[in-house]
Amino acid sequence: MRENSKMEYSVRQNKSKKGLTIERFLTYLIFLSILFFFGYLLFSKIFIKDSKPVNEVEVKEESVDEKKEEVKEIVVKSEFKTIDGQSAYIAFDENAKDDAKYPVVIYSHGSTYTVSDNPNNPLTKDLNYYADIFVKNGYIFAASNQHGDNWGKEPAIGDTKKLVEELEKSYKSNGEIYLLGFSMGGLVTMNFAEKYPENIKKIALLAPTSYVNTWNATRVERIKEIPIKIWHGDKDVNVPYSMSTNLIKKFSSLGKEIEFITVESAGHFDIDTEYTDAIVEFYKSQ
Image (cartoon, rainbow, N blue to C red; front, top):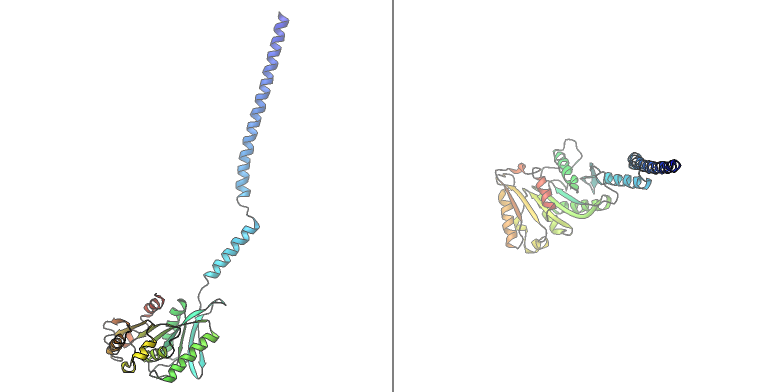
């Protein structure tokens, strides 16, 4: 009996030890699995997250470089150039891409003014002001001396044509033309547009001199599709306000409407450079 009891006790003890061994093994296995799992997470955070494929880094760096090129700063450069004996002022973006093309704004000056590189020239300050705004809005800005006090005659029209050709040949003109005339310059602007209406997109006039009797149905028809906008002060004693109102009535009777802005209580020199932002808005509007 005792021997049988001892044997039964020994068997039970062996079974118990065997059970403990399996339990320990499973416990170690679970513990090692947990350690491996947390070790993998830690490794991923430290090494995998911060590592990037070489190709991916290069692509992103190229993308950044492309964005830098896209937001390249506009640098306004102006210069004087003699074109067939007439001094011309030309301003453009010095940072423009090689394949870039721009519309041009041609400015026609008033009487007693000249376009020259003389440092004491009173017009140069205005030209620089215009250039800064127009170039930064995506245009080339240019003005010819147009034979000084020209009163819209043929030589001044010819000067303007040669300036346009020079811009197309030596600068980045895309062929689109926007005209701007102040005072006497209104005569050159309108006469040039009537003679060479091709590629002229819009016309802006500031207190313009106009000879209403020189316009007839044939001449008006040639510029009928070109939008025109006039700003004129009702207190102008240099170029009467009535010059613009009479021109508008004449054109209207011939089927051409002109947008007109009356600048109340403004004199002749109150609306030269003061409405440049409004002109840009007019040029860019549909």
